[in-house]
Amino acid sequence: MEEKTVSLLKKAIKFFFTSGIGFIMDLTAYTIMTQVFDLSVMRANFFSSMIGSTFVFIVSTHKIFENGRSALPLPAKYGAYVIYQLLLIFLASELGDFINGLIHTHFEFELLLRYSKLVCKVLITPLTMTCNFFVMRFISERI
Image: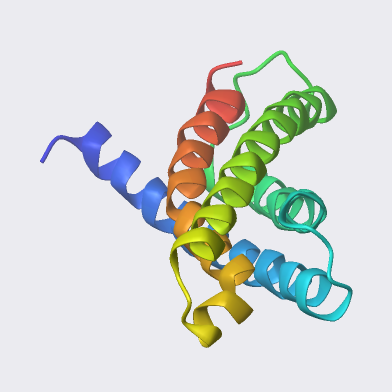
């Protein structure tokens, strides 16, 4: 395998591990907000995602991606990442609300209905993690 490919694969593995920790933080906050405080998918996902994504940004920029060649300071990169995250969180939250509506419209299984908001979060997360890897890599190493 080419050295660049191996390096990218190592970064991806580290990023997905770090994102897994961020996901646990995100899911814990999301669960508390939806199950204890009965927040909507949209609101809970917004707040919980910002917690997880900020953790992932901090670790990724210091431990995974190379930041040395950039003229853009780290706070500006974080600003760009926050803008990206706000858009992604909005879109993922809309998708979550849509999936949640589908579950409640088409299913009658009590347990699924009770935890439908968590099901939505789990279904959407792999897509957002993949997007985050490529955007984080671009922000860290290219700008």
